[in-house]
Image (cartoon, rainbow, N blue to C red):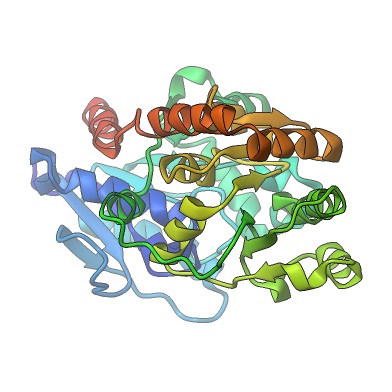
Amino acid sequence: MKKTTVAIDCRPLENEYAGHGIGTVVRNILSSLQKTQFATNIELFATTNNKNIPHFSCKRLWRPSWREWVWEQLFLPFDIALSRCSVYHSTVSLGPIRSVALPFLSTAKTIATVYDLNSFKCEALKHTSKTRSFKIQTLALKKAAAIVTFSQYVKKHITESFSIVPEMIVVLPVAVDKRIAEVYEKAHYECHCDGHYIFSMGETANKNIETVITVFETLVSNGYRGNLRIAGLLSLQPDSVKDRYKKSFCKEKIHFLGRISVNQLVGEYAHCDFFIYPSICEGFGLPVIEAMYCAAPVLCSSVTSLPEAGGEAALYCDPFDVDTFVTNASLVTADKKFRNRLIDEGRRHASANSWDDTAEKLITLYKKLL
């Protein structure tokens, strides 16, 4: 076996994906792969010598800053050929960021990573699937030697959408971000709010923040005296959310926190009355297990992959069922015994998986293709 048998694209640690779920998944997988004996067979594809990249052998890629998706599809096959790798693992394979993509041509066997099919399943995001870059990626997906994803829901929809046999698709376990776990266990988190509050997050249309605001308003009308705190920028919210916020009778109690640090994120989870996540479309739902790990009761929608993320430790309902969200919220805030049981179940559920298990399952796949 030659030294570099597998090349892994780690550019999601360096671009817009870095602060989101995709960057979190790639960072944690590489951190666990680094500890294995197989690490000597791995080379990373990167654009910088970013300090957040684990110390593997690294190949630096160069792309012109204009028409990035064109250059990506032209140059990436050459990068793969020059590395002489036998397997190329694309860590973004149906993504809207055009500078990181699954190659249509490759001298190596390709592994595609599909986080979700939101661009097909969520009406507000369908415009991303109309781009040429995205269409090329869907064609490349059908040529991949294997596909990895993170929920049975996405696996099922890959087989239905692309007529790909289930045996080609490996579902990897998802765990809590190691940084979040460390901050919570060492109690190094920050809390910037005195008193009671409800916590949520999201900036894109699928996060359904409009429902979050409606639920909060109903609770305030019923006597709730706390605030609503939302991780994310108001300026990036869909117009419907901006309008809902501006017209809210309790606007002074609604706070958009912008981009927050890991320490503050853990603090928001740890001190909230509950975490509400009425997303209408998810590939897994990392915030659900993050909140559970940090001892927050979780109320979330019952659609797509979220029941897999929360297991039996969350309270579910239709993403637009405001009345049931309000009922569940009232139950969590009024019944201390029920709240504590939900927190305990959530902590156990969120601690069940390990990124080391994810790495071992990936290594098994790498060896199979080699």
